[in-house]
Length: 328
Image 1 (cartoon, rainbow, N blue to C red):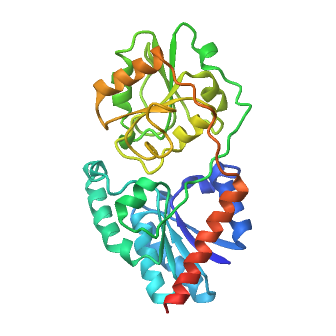
Image 2 (tube, helix red, strand yellow):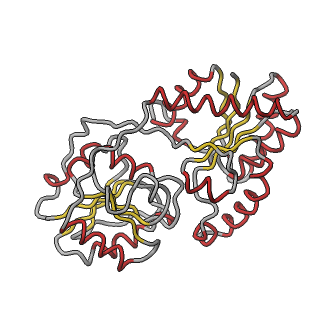
């Protein structure tokens, strides 16, 4: 099967990164995978024009079975190419574009949502990463398939040994961007005596260490952090999935999170975590205090195997190609 994919993840340029390794596995499972990389190294706006003509030249030379794209700008390119070359295209949605908070974060997001509303009914098929997104876009035929993340053991670090003297260790692992609402987490933890917030991640919102907040750079393997913390915290204003929260549950680490992404779907309030309204600091403080006083101890979350995930991923693309042919 031949698949043409658009991506903007700069980690594809890094040999041995988790993203590049995942793409290699996709290619092996599919048979042939061509990736058009549209990261900002190719220009903020010019990259889209360059990507369109690069993809156009590829499609002129050889027939592909499916075009796959996962960002609004990429969807538009995929739609144009699909119309020109009669190739089905798969819309991948990895963030909750219908959340009211999504459009509040930037003018660009407003136009991205408008573009999404135009393109969703025109996509040959849709893959989303959570049931929340599937319901919000009103495409009942959308396939729910999160990105696979295997449990990694042997991380070696213990936050309690690295930062002794606290009685409640709270972990965050995230891109440090505006929608993650890191300030909300910091403000809430400041009101909890004896608590330490460890923030693992990289991005423009990185701050400086203080008595109850420690900032660390991104780590590929967080197993030691998950195993030695008391709870995982996610305070996003909107989220497509929440991979780090799901990873935490794989280690039996309970989660406190805002009502986004996998809240209610994988993170069950009162069972393996506590869910609070988006942006509600008082509710967040109460949830963290409740977790410290009466900690939840969930069994480690069991997830599908990598082989099963790859099978479902390939199946979603094959079904997309097959259904498109049937409609002709």
